[in-house]
Length: 341
Image (cartoon, rainbow, N blue to C red):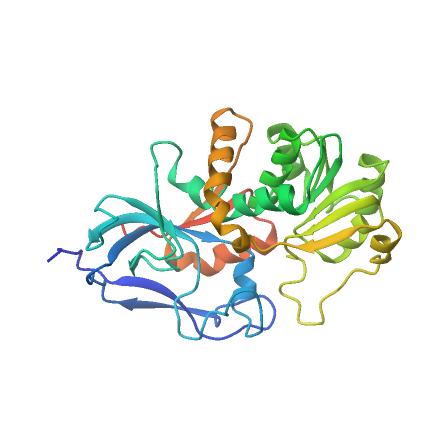
């Protein structure tokens, strides 16, 4: 029998589906006894939880690419942590596993959807960021959906975020001219000076349409969209012949209480024989290892950089979640919920 700390397993539970931005009534903190491993299971002590804009969609009760989180269930989230008990043939105590453990301090799992990572190569946080779901989204989105080619002009919205920052750097590695869109001088400076983009449009202080005309005078070959709304419209207006639009996210629309704002410039796709395609990273699950190896090599060579914004405490889940939508983060947003007892 494994001796556990005397404290309980703290979990974030979905209590009701919000209208608009989630608030204090959306989730609650629950304490349950720490589980013990059944035959074929491991117990993982969670260190970090990934916070992603997609979480807002997962709590809607509507048809989507993945079933919604059920009421009174642990909130879905990517996690990384250490095995503290194992009755599983493939995992040992001390292994670090990344997977879909949800927002809770201890996870009982049969290992489905979890994989072992080597934290001697890169820090634990990178496996939820550049080498995790955001990095995979960027990799397959820009290469497989965007089909970028050397010499093309690529525009990335949400350029200082977890996905956009990686997508833009991959486009630079592949020889493209890359322009970002981000909010505020500090983020724009980060995108250009640290990530190596060729320019960045500050949507908070500049007209995006004017910025695109300035930085992309010959138009856009590929637009990687994380934002939707007016910024998507502005990009469509400057699409070049046979341009591609990668629909990765629409963070400007996720908390709308009114109908979603669709593009009014969609006829640009017709005129320019363009393509606009949605991206769901789970479709590429069988190729994650391929992407991880290449991006890991780029990181070791100093070609791919990433940054994390880390907050502490499972009790701070809601205010940390809100940082996805108020711009108060840079790079990958993580919550450190490690039980330090």
